[in-house]
Image (tube, rainbow, N blue to C red; front, side, top):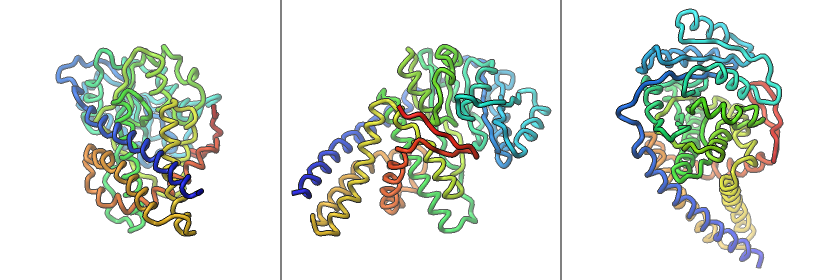
Length: 383
């Protein structure tokens, strides 16, 4: 009897899960339509780069930002040093001495905000551009990044969200390291597909802050991060904030910058823990989707356990796991195609068992309000 109840619940939830994934998949076909105006008037823009202990990557980031096709006199790069303990500030000042487009600022306190929020707020308030572009100090921008991003701003657009696929893997990686990068790549590109699909459908669930641009006037109008309050996911909160409380449109863009995967398991865990620590602050539709996704993955483990103890037949587990996979595959396939990584598709079936465990683990962790990032410990606010 208990087995039948669980199976009924599982397949009813799978029907909802499948319907949402179909809708998100169809939403991906709207992404990029009519974007990137061929003719536009260049305006002065500001690129804000928060940085904490990024001495290994900062030079490459700044070099990429100074080697843009956008008119040199029409943009500034504001590097905000978030109390780094390495040579980040020294490297930034070297660039500022050589190129007047680079401005270097320091944060002195992070009261009521995370360190990154305070760094972003410091840079944004010091900016002179009509449009503010955000990029992280460990990312690298293609030469047309600024130009192509500015082209996305039609008269009614207030925010555009781009994405950050990984750079090419090092050839000297071990088998385990390569497997970890493959897992991270499939996971993050699939999540980008969900983000793009939801935004195209007018839901604006998530975005990534290391490739984000918005109108400065909106930030001032809403009161900045001080008004938004403490959050570990300042990018997503800003997206939802603008979508909910202004007349401006938000939209995804296919303009990318490149970043690096987490190098260690500890980095990976800390990164994902930070991403999901404020999930209860997300808009209702996003939170419900996350809950359904968690239960779908948990039910795979529950059904596997019931099979082991002979409560249900293995055919039900295979059917349920197959329905989950069939629901996800079109969106995953389309997402990998968008980011030119269809080479990863052959690994997708292999990572599924690990992804189930990963989703359940971080679903449980999301109930905790604690996370560590860049050497600082935080406690997020659950509402």
